[in-house]
Image (cartoon, rainbow, N blue to C red; front, side, top):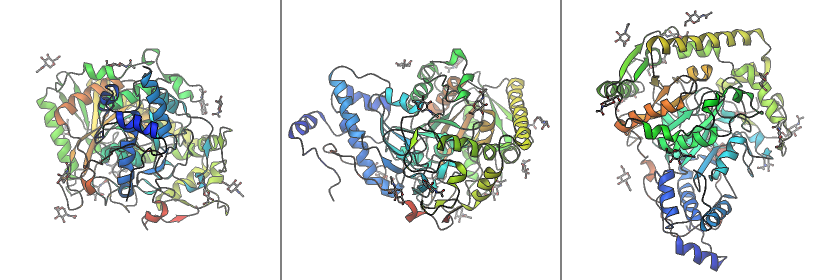
Amino acid sequence: MCLLKFLALSLFLATACYARTAPIDVREATVSSIHNPLFSGSTTCRGIVSAFLARIEKFNPDINAIITLNPDALSIADSLDGALSQGGATGPLFCIPILLKDNYDALPMATTGGCLALNASKPTQDGPAVRALRNAGAVILGKSNLHELALEGLSVSSLGGQTINPYDFTRTPGGSSGGTGAAVAASFAVFGTGTDTVNSLRSPASANSLFSFRPTRGLISRAGVIPISYTQDTIGAIGRSLPDIATALTVMSSVGYDPTDNATSAIPPSVIGTNYTAFLSQARSSNLTGIRIGVLEGFFNRTSSNETSPVNTAMANVLSMLQAKGATVVPINDTMTYNATLISSLMDVQTSEYREFLTAYLSSPNLTGPHPISMPQLYTPNATRPDFLVIPSQYSYVEAALRTSTSNSSYYLKQFLITNLTRSLHTTFSANQLTCLIYPEQKNLVVPIGSPSQSGRNGILAALTGSPVITIPIGFSPSTRTAPIGIPIGMEILGLPWSEGTLLQVAKSIDDVLHARKMPVTGGLNETVEVTGVYSTVPNVTPLGVRNIPSAYPLGVY
Ligand SMILES: *[C@@H]1O[C@H](CO)[C@@H](O)[C@H](O)[C@H]1NC(C)=O
Ligand SMILES: *[C@@H]1O[C@H](CO)[C@@H](O)[C@H](O)[C@H]1NC(C)=O
Ligand SMILES: *[C@@H]1O[C@H](CO)[C@@H](O)[C@H](O)[C@H]1NC(C)=O
Ligand SMILES: *[C@@H]1O[C@H](CO)[C@@H](O)[C@H](O)[C@H]1NC(C)=O
Ligand SMILES: *[C@@H]1O[C@H](CO)[C@@H](O)[C@H](O)[C@H]1NC(C)=O
Ligand SMILES: *[C@@H]1O[C@H](CO)[C@@H](O)[C@H](O)[C@H]1NC(C)=O
Ligand SMILES: *[C@@H]1O[C@H](CO)[C@@H](O)[C@H](O)[C@H]1NC(C)=O
Ligand SMILES: *[C@@H]1O[C@H](CO)[C@@H](O)[C@H](O)[C@H]1NC(C)=O
Ligand SMILES: *[C@@H]1O[C@H](CO)[C@@H](O)[C@H](O)[C@H]1NC(C)=O
Ligand SMILES: *[C@@H]1O[C@H](CO)[C@@H](O)[C@H](O)[C@H]1NC(C)=O
Ligand SMILES: *[C@@H]1O[C@H](CO)[C@@H](O)[C@H](O)[C@H]1NC(C)=O
Ligand SMILES: *[C@@H]1O[C@H](CO)[C@@H](O)[C@H](O)[C@H]1NC(C)=O
């Protein structure tokens, strides 16, 4: 089967491109490893985009991470090649291929949330963070699958189907930004974006041996992204290296104050325009002297089992390494306050906010194409539009969201408890003079496909308190029959609001010792895909959709 389509239509262009396009190996590519051959003239932007398209075309049928490719990707690459030839290669992400979780508005694609009912819902403009990525030179390759409407962590949706973990084809990739996580792990793009209402930027990073940032609430405008919760939603990036996610953070946060997301009014003047990459170059490599790191004892499952022990072993290795490199480790044993299950059940406000905020998005005049125009309409049986996926545990969620709102007294009580939790967290920092807190993102390994939920995750603390977190890879479980190099394990590094720079420094000092990130080898994902020319058109990538939804998740009308 011929996978590559050459520029046969235009002999002139083809000659020009062949002359300047050496095959490039994009496995584990970074912003700088793309920029070197591009700026030295040994490849073109079209050549780079083609190399990623070749990997997607070859491996997406195994991983099922992509919902749609951007039909404009190659013409954007050409215009960047034009700018390059005229000395106009500007922007920190010049010709960097990226993927967007399919809840980000980006022209000319639909924003589906992975939901069949939104398959034709098209924005009239990019969201502000997407505009910033584009202005910085990024090439949007396409949209990645997610858990339907970002409501769970299994990364299965009615439009996309089930995304597969590249390290173990029997496991989920975490979620809800699991399409981005799986795609970035498989080198389908340099990095990708995600959203995080409770765990969704951190769980896919943890499950795919990647780095991510969840920004301080308000640092990055969430406008133009399908919302769930005003209090808990954030947007960010997932990548294979700290410099790449630092650049993504710099670009996405450059939007600054945005009147269409008033949470951005909280950004302190001193934070506006920060270059986060600069913090990495200032980090003391592998030297943690003077850093005080709190460890949340309540965020572990100390039961010994195949699912929990590898996580506890990886964390124990990190703790002994931290001490060996001069850090002070402070156990935080207040398991009454820091109990993720308990604080989720008492304080999570998503269901009270979902109806209002999703309706505001769906009813915007800036959304075109046939689509439901309110949250209740989305969840109302409707013969003219297809069914969507609600996994069993989500029925009660949707039911609660249809009934409750931000004017209920229970909502005010939860907000009061969140304020108290935030105060407790800040007290833990000041009383122990902490630089950061650490804990495993998930108390157990990422769950197998078909599991009822993505259990054991610890993301709720940052979600409720609006705290920033950098997630880093810290190791792998022992190898198994289905996971040749083991299943990835990730750790959260949580800080006080606006401390992203410090967290990146700590993350770098730790990563310089661990170097835990490994590329997947399952299904030949570690092999190069030979690209001898360039693509003339963007290939058709069809998500597996309902064909590979596990029978445990019935497709039905709510
Ligand atoms: C959306 O789904 C409907 C019903 O299956 C189908 O008729 C329509 O063509 C789809 N639209 C797009 C843009 O995919
Ligand atoms: C901010 O926007 C939210 C959602 O639009 C609204 O509920 C809230 O009242 C606004 N707050 C302020 C201070 O403007
Ligand atoms: C940010 O800082 C890095 C290193 O300090 C520098 O190389 C880069 O050019 C800066 N980026 C911007 C957008 O100023
Ligand atoms: C580590 O950093 C501390 C504080 O800056 C410094 O005093 C110490 O010499 C450094 N150690 C090494 C091995 O570089
Ligand atoms: C702890 O892990 C064990 C073994 O995987 C599991 O059976 C149990 O449900 C977990 N406990 C909690 C509270 O998550
Ligand atoms: C745990 O892992 C061991 C070694 O891979 C395996 O023999 C055993 O069957 C596993 N136990 C369970 C309950 O899956
Ligand atoms: C806190 O927990 C750690 C780990 O379980 C334990 O070693 C330590 O003694 C405890 N500290 C206090 C003050 O209880
Ligand atoms: C506030 O937090 C503290 C410390 O976690 C806790 O002891 C107290 O019970 C909380 N107050 C309320 C009203 O929940
Ligand atoms: C955490 O809270 C849950 C739910 O209230 C409870 O079942 C569990 O025992 C608590 N865990 C600890 C370590 O206190
Ligand atoms: C719709 O787009 C216009 C033009 O860009 C913008 O001014 C307006 O804020 C947008 N409306 C909403 C609800 O996002
Ligand atoms: C059914 O769904 C379509 C597309 O989402 C919408 O345009 C239409 O108004 C809906 N019909 C009813 C009766 O809600
Ligand atoms: C890919 O991984 C397999 C299994 O570990 C190994 O045998 C093979 O040599 C690797 N290929 C490359 C190109 O690294």
